[in-house]
Image (cartoon, rainbow, N blue to C red; front, side, top):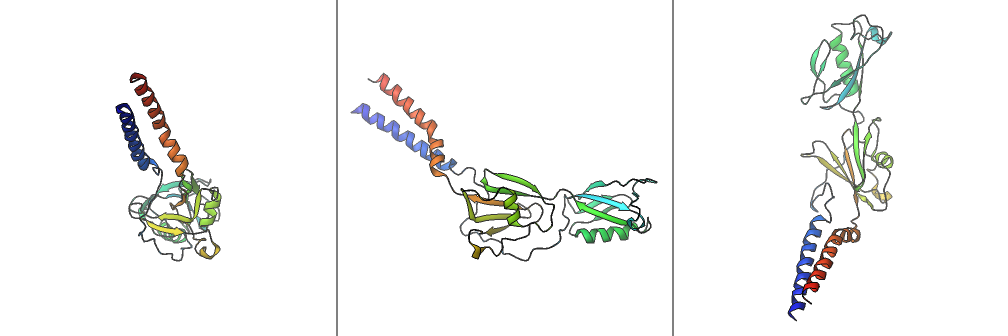
Length: 250
């Protein structure tokens, strides 16, 4: 009787340990969790033109004579067209040839080009400026944290649906009615919630994306497989313990 009681005690202790560990690790890969009372950001009309942000990489071409001959004036006497990359600093300034640092963050590409053309009129005849942002991208987790993609944002009219499609679509374990989009400073981001399961709820599905947006499609919890994978080592440990216990106490 004593041996049986001790066996039950060992089994009970191991079951408690397994339960505690499993509860802590069953959803250990979940990301961007929000409380049930969390207030998501309200949808508003998307801006059609991209605005330059700190840490953007800019490809800037500075051309003379209104760009007619495509002469690169950044090299004295040079006749070949070259482009140089410039980084927008943390405070929104960019350091450019001849004019030095200038505030460029918050401006659209068109506004920035027009501003620089005015600045370079002091040094060149009919300056012609071409700017492109080379490091725009978004991050898409299309099936929870297990499937992530970094997608270059080459189109200013790139939508949520296009991003999900390019990342591989919605799989059997994804929740199409729980898609989160994080935008802005990750210390205090705007968080939007999308539901694309029902056509009646897809009014916001063509939401235009911005550089550095994060899309997270929640996945269905795989409780059975996770529990089995978590407790398998403990089952082996329990079997070994019972074997040793029975071997020495027969």
